Each structure stands twice: as C-alpha cells, then as structure tokens.
Image (cartoon, rainbow, N blue to C red; front, side, top):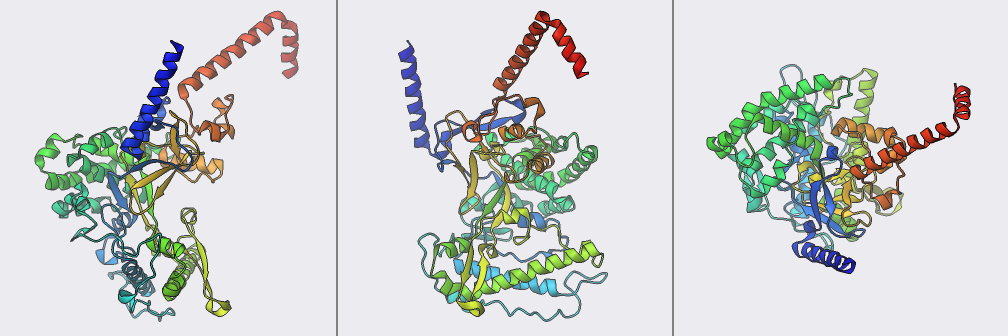
Length: 545
C-alpha cells in the first residue's frame, strides 16, 4: 500500500509537469487562497522551478501609462508636454523604427526645453506665453538626415519595431486586438463623457488618481464581456478603496472621507462614459460584474492593493548596449541628449533650492509628472548602463542609458496581480517589448511553495521598507525577513529558516499551531517547576522585584 501511494504521487508529479509544460509558462503556477486569510489569494508553484526559469507570462487586463496619469492633472491641453516615445496606446509596445524613436525623442526634448525657457505667465495668460525666451546655449537637436540614417544591424535589438497598424484620434495601435480593446472602444465611443470623467479626477492626489483611472479601465474591460475578465476581475473586488486607509494613521478618517468623496463625485461621469460605449442595458444589468458605485470603489481598492508597476526599456537602450557599431552612428545624437539632460537636472535642482530658500514659489515647479531623469530612489533603481564614447579628454564623453526614457505605467494582471509581497522574494518582475509581464525565479522554488515578489525596494532599511508598505498598501509585513529582524514581536519565538530555504513565505495555519503548542508547553513546564520547588521560585521572584 505504501509503495502504491508513492507510485501514485510520483505519477501525479510527472503528469503535473507534462500538463504544465504542454500549456506553457503560466500553467506551472496556480492561484489559490493562502493559509493566512489576511493575504487573500497567492500564486503557488505546481512543479519545482529553477533559478532563472520563467514562472509566468501575463498580459494586463488594463494599463495606465504614467504620461496619461500626468496629463489628467493638466487643465489646458496646450500645456501637455510632447511625447518622448512612440508606443501602442493599449499595450505600451514601442512602434516605428529606432530612427523614428530617436527623432521623436530629440524633437520632444527640444520643444520641452523651449517651453521651459519661456517666461512664466502673468495673470490671465497661459504658461509659455509672454515675451521672447532666453537664448538657448544648446544647439538645435541633430535631427537632420535621421530619416535616411541606416543604423548597423544588431543581433539583439532589431532596428525595425512594431508597426503602427491603426492610428486614431485617441491613440495609435500596433494590432487589431489593441485597437479593439475595451478601453480603446470606450474612449472612442464615449468621446466627451470619458474626457469629463478624466477632468473630474484630475484634481485628486496622484496616488489616488492612479487608482481611480485604472479602476475605471478595469470596469470597462469587465463590462465589455471579455471572458478572461470574469475571473480576472471578480476575485479582485474585495474592499472599497475608502476602507483601505491604515487604521493607525493620524489622518485615516480624513483620507477615507476624501477618497469616498472623489469616487462618488466621479462615478456619474464614468457611468455616462460606460453607457455611451457599451449601452444602457449593460450598465443597468451588468456583465461579469455589477455596474455600480460599490463595484467601482472595490476595483479602485484592488488597484491600490494589486497593481504592478510597468517599465518597458527603450529599444535604443538595448541597441546601444548590444551594438558596438552604435557609437559611430549615434555619437552626435547621444551627446546632445546627454547635454540636454544635464541641463534639465541642474535646472530642477536649482529650482528646488530656490524654493527652500524662499526665492521661488513651489507652485512654479511641476511636482506631478513622472520624470525619467529625477534623481530619486525609483529612478536610481532603473536599469542603466554607463559608457564612454570618443577618445581623449576633449572629444570623449560619458553617459548612461537613462537618456533613453523607458515606457512607464501601472497595470492590473489576471494572474500576476495575485503575487504577494516578501522582503526577500523568490521571484522578480521583468518587461521586454511591451507591458506583458515576465515573472522569473530568483532561486529554486519547490512545488507548492508560494511565489512572491517585492512591492518595494528590498534594499531599503527595514523600518523604511515597512513604512512604505504600510502607507502604500495598508499592511504590516510579517515575512521571514521582518520576523528575523525583530519587527514582528508576537512572532519572534518562531525559528526562521534562512530566506533561501524558506522562500520568504509563511504558512500561517501551521505557524499559529506551533506558537500555541510552544506557549502551552512553556506554561505547563513552568507550572510543574513551581509545584516541585515553590520556595526557590518565590525567592527568584522576590529578587526580580
């Protein structure tokens, strides 16, 4: 009987492996409820996974580009900065060719530089209007001849990218699937209704605005009748966003009130846009999920708790890294971008210093946009490579690949959004050509072990890391690292395995049982000791007092 059971288990493992490999990467994992009910669902390995192996690939239900998030806060459309990259509106894939991408970047930087150099407006005038701008010390961008420039071929990065197959008023798309995505359909069909909704959330703080905009897009995907959205959206609808404020925060009640007010104020405009796009019958009766204020609030909450940051590297970055001959073809262009970036970073630092000295109003600095060159922790964590091109002190120059801005955004994924956090994760997130996420194993993962990622920078100090998790996601981390470092007092008795053995996960049912059993044993031992030798125990207590 024992051998039969072992044989059955071995056969089951083999079948699981064959089934997983036949269906693709996503089939090697599954989502299911965690032992700790506070963590909700998690992603668990169905087979043993090795270091560097692809755990899953997942396409987003909905994507919110950072540029779109920033533009929502700009009242005058003429003040929207020019796009530095050409991408598909739905999936974020870079389109065109390397030379058209370079031309777009150079022209955008030059136009933004001209706008920034223009004098500040007086009352009643739009930013950028007024007298003539200061003389620019930087020459015009070297865009002449780019259309005819033939770049050397690269084995890693093709010079031709995805085609812009469909160009519409509300965006450009790389394929028919992206062009007919529910969000694209809603934006095209709803016309002014969607714009009215975006304007309604434009004044909301950036972090909350991200949740409201992406929550609206997820609801549109669900109502469009996409069969994948039924499971991909339904399990996310847990708690309304206004219930997610940390309970120990000083302004928790005020935050909840402000968020509720913003969601309730924007809901009528969002419902009007959804009705215009999918019909009154859908918004009245629902499809996959009810089209109600409560559903919208829960999807906004799901976005706050489950959204993943998206960073797609610029193809020119990959081209420069992989192609030695790029130096001969792009030296002039990269040198201009490097000088422009240095001026931009220096100007921003000067403005911030003037604000601190009281010589400049803080309202004159743009604090809303996701800048690709900000010297912040997030920007410093971006993938970058440093080079020195040219020869000699006069002709040579140093630069790094952050002169080529990545596509940045936020997205909700059907499967990947169920990945839970660990301060020592066993998986990492990667993007290659578009917003499709690739989850890779950082070390060996055993069958039935939970797959985890880091929601924040794991290299941060423990207190800073936990504070960011609490403020952003509303939970106190109780992973093995936090227990080992003494941040979870009520779990300090647990013997924690090294992170590479434990995988950073907690099996809460087993843990609670271990703790209860250990405490009961200690109490029982103390009671027996006191019964056998009460006087020494009393003397010890008196000495302690």
